Every structure is written in C-alpha cells, then in structure tokens.
Image (tube, rainbow, N blue to C red):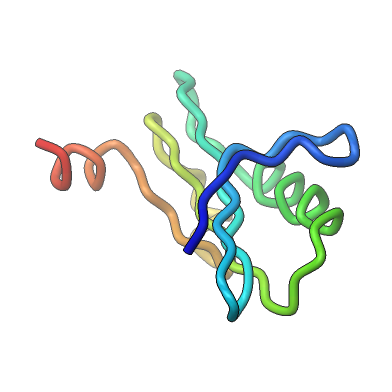
Length: 87
C-alpha cells in the first residue's frame, strides 16, 4: 500500500493509502472535544475527488468519538488505541 497526503480539488485529506484493491482515507484530529458525524461526512465528500473502486475510512482522534460514529462503517482509533500500540 502506498500512503500519501492528498490536496486535490482544493480539499485536503490527511491520509490516503492506495493499493490494487482500493483506497483508505483517513483524518486525524487533536482537539479537546470528541469528533462526530461532521468529520466522517466531510471525509466521504472529499474522497469523491479520488478515483477508486473501493473506499475505506479511518478516523484518529485524541479526544475520542461521539456515539453517533460507532454506527458508521469507519475504523475509529482513539487515544487509548494509540497509547496501547505505541506505549
């Protein structure tokens, strides 16, 4: 998988990973408040500028996620997961 940052179409996407099967789109937020639907909705909208046969989404948030995101088809990586993985 090839990872890069995308700024096409006047839109910025923090993480774009591309392989033969599809594309992974990711956003990273370091804020005091948990993130919600507006983040994934914006990422999905921005991903439409990238030609891909399959799209997957991941969100990183230091302050966690609102419950509404837990019903979405998106991988959520918060502070605990980052600390568990990186110590």
